[in-house]
Amino acid sequence: DAGVIQSPRHEVTEMGQEVTLRCKPISGHDYLFWYRQTMMRGLELLIYFNNNVPIDDSGMPEDRFSAKMPNASFSTLKIQPSEPRDSAVYFCASSPWMNTEAFFGQGTRLTVV
Amino acid sequence: AQTVTQSQPEMSVQEAETVTLSCTYDTSESDYYLFWYKQPPSRQMILVIRQEAYKQQNATENRFSVNFQKAAKSFSLKISDSQLGDAAMYFCAYLEETSGSRLTFGEGTQLTVNP
Image (cartoon, rainbow over all chains, first blue to last red; front, side, top):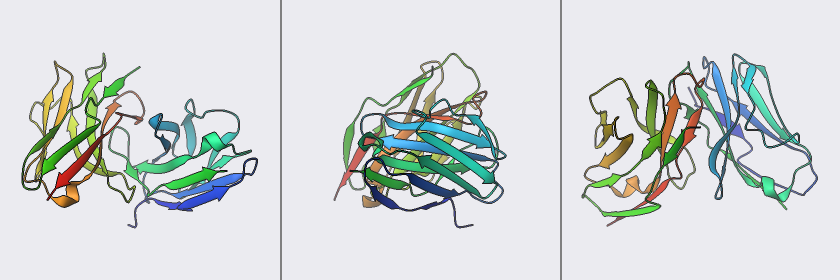
């Protein structure tokens, strides 16, 4: 398997624009996670899905953020409108079942100017 | 809420030497999992080692081993025979059995390996 695949790897956008980050989890993994990494807050969980259903979105910072998982092989994280403070590395990760390690993608570095 | 603390923001080691990275955590649970992840400059988060809290035996993976002290809520990572490729940010992470697989990460320790 190719591992968790994220796109794009880098994204630079202007404040106010819509940003969509994409993720393809490892085939057969039931859990999908979106994490955000910043210098100030470290790695924090934004939302996770189990079998395509959002289970916990308590980490989503505000209504400008939304995530979807329309099928087992694809998920998106959308920010609309984007703000400079959203600049961070966004990771997607998946795991095969509950209570096991997560496998991470290479992350998307988002810069909002 | 569970917290994970890595008190060493930076560590350095000479090539071929041994280094230990510290991690403590706070929990009232008895069933949980602990992990060490490595993040090299490529940004990829790579699993180094895992430990189940119910296991008394410390986990080992080649040159990597842990010292798991459940009563002290301590989970340190020992890297033996350090190599230049070990240079990275290391994150300790906690997963509670009832949390639905959500990981809580420490702040990270930046490891430098000197030739």
